[in-house]
Image (cartoon, rainbow, N blue to C red; front, top):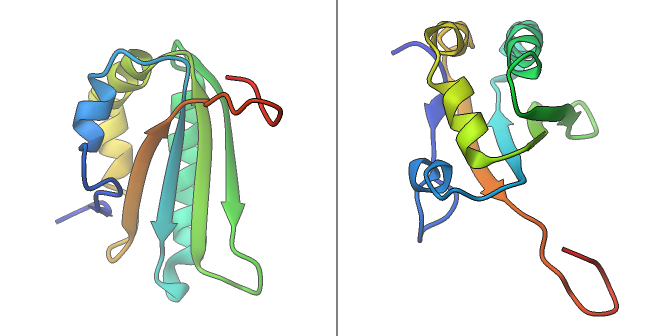
Length: 124
C-alpha cells in the first residue's frame, strides 16, 4: 500500500471527524515516524506536498521540525483558516497522488488543535 500508514492520535475523536468539525482557525500537528534510510526521500516528498498545500486556499503557514540528534522523527506544524479548508485541500486528487509518493514504512499521526485560553498564561 503506497503512502504512509495513518495512526489515530486521539482515542475520542477521529481525524476525519476533526476535519468535519467546522473548527477554525486550526493547527495541524502531524508526527511522522520515518525509517532512517528513507529520510532524504521523505524530505523530498514533504517539499512537494507542502508546496502544494501552501498554494491552497486557507493555508496560512507550514513548518517542519525534526527530532534532534539525527532523529528520524518529524513534526509538521501547519496553520489553516479552518478545518474545512484543510479538508478541501486534502480531498484533491493531486494531494492524494503526492501522499502516495512518501516512503514505505512511514507512519503519520495527524491531529487538529485550536488555541485554548488559560487565564494569566495565554489567550485563545
